[in-house]
Length: 295
Image 1 (cartoon, rainbow, N blue to C red):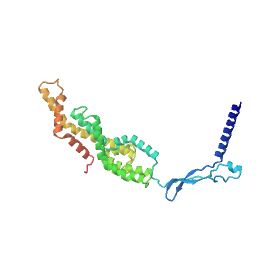
Image 2 (image 1 turned 30 degrees about the vertical axis):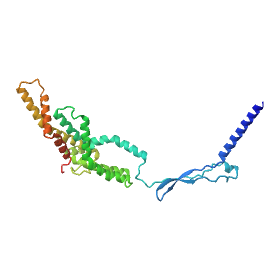
Image 3 (image 1 turned 90 degrees about the vertical axis):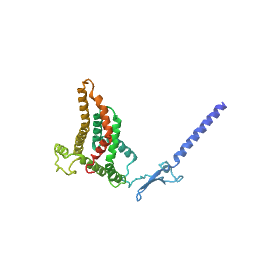
Image 4 (image 1 turned 30 degrees about the horizontal axis):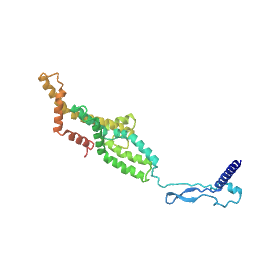
């Protein structure tokens, strides 16, 4: 019986201590640290500024003790760095650029002409998969970056650097960034292709001014011109190899070996001619020079 009474007393004592602790916590004033802005310098930072109405122990009435001890204030943060992009937005723009980058490389750079010419070169040699597609695409990308380096540098200096420093807004940065690409495409675009698409879009053009051609018209005109130039260069590359095929086929027919495929005999001679003439150097160097007609 005595043990039960002692256990009951201990429980009552614990409940009393728990109740007193709750009252102490409720009566303790809360301190909130706010973000303070120096508008003149455009700097933000966390400071120890307290927003409490009263210091601990100043409450005199139960009503004051029950009030929430926090001032009804607000902090406004203003930043003068208008050109700085938030980290989340920067990641979003980077991912968007990565998704659009293949389209830009295919349609607005020298990649199309290069890959077409290299493909014709491999087909003319009759080597089927040598060099493999990975090598051709990698070589085309490297040559594309080499050719487009001055254009990319101009885009970086005229658009990206001023935008990052806050001198221009996003819309003006896009307008400045597209100008070097338009100049590059217009230099390789034939006037007849641009005129056809201008007529389809029902837009007047004097035949000389780049500013009058919308980007939506310049891109397809540039693609058509690149395909035409690429196929023209491919045809020129094919000519000496066609001569070798004809000579080998005529020789086999005169020898009565009509069942032997001419390509089997002509392919070693094609490779020999290509190596002796340093064909890769001739093809790549002249292909790069085709983008600089005045150079």
